[in-house]
Image 1 (spheres, helix red, strand yellow):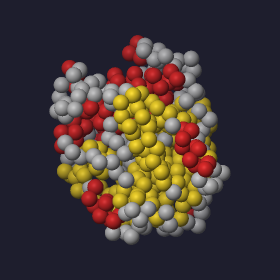
Image 2 (cartoon, chains in turn yellow, red, orange):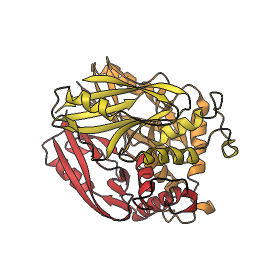
Image 3 (cartoon, each protein chain N blue to C red):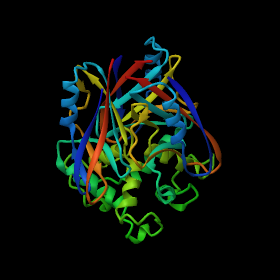
Length: 140
Length: 140
Length: 140
């Protein structure tokens, strides 16, 4: 069984879509199985992170902004792929460091997420984007 | 087929559990198939790394401790999620950079690991933890 | 269904093998399903990245070379696993930060890659290597 989740983003940061995913799995009729998510982009990532304190999301964004400065930062003067804007190549770099696909076992109709785990798109671009996440669900 | 591996950790570092995984797969009766592992936490990672020289594990820990300093390091003064201790937000950051799930083909009853590949939990917290790794095995 | 792709590398950088993968999937007779790739090494990674502008690949290599300097760089003097050369431990570190496995849904005989997504081996060693990528394909 397959579907596509569409996540509208509005600048860099984490966008949770756990509920869309769990609702789709619950409605599928699959009891036990395996869920796979795959983001069809090279400048945004999938991420499983804590969904209790929103400061975690802000801190993640702040950390990676410092680890991979924009192309107009002197520290990044060696970058050559800059025609799509100073946030573009850093977005590709972050996309290399964080997941493009996630696989989560499903038990009794629920992905076996831990208590604090939420599923996010981590948008690495500044401009608004519409991100497509392909989902695949297989029954045992 | 599903199970959960429990890995007791005692501070930051790599904890190998390759043998538990390969024993479970071998005992499952599955010949060819697909193995998926998923760690149900946001402050520890799954990792496949060299299991020949233990210095590799120490060096990995040392590198990531420098790349993501603790929250009481002046370089990290911008962090806001600090109430759970100086090692907590860095743990979330490291968990974003390293795998939460792994998928490994299985051939003739064995995960097709390379000669030097071992399967680890990379614990990012200082205090002892009991980590749950959900495992899913599907036959071809 | 399983196979192994062999990718010959000749120094650090990205080596695309999208066509081998899509040709194998197309020839398999599988319509909808799930594709999994797993690299059987601890000093090279799998990566999905932009395949339009080759500068992206050069910039990725340049960024990670700066993020993880070689063992003979004074900043890395703390490394202990150095007997296999100054590029070896940095290769293990990069392999921890980038994917060892990828899972991609397959629809109508094609992996659902986005428009600009290509599949690469990211070689982290300087010397030529022959890299094995195990592939698994399951029909829905």
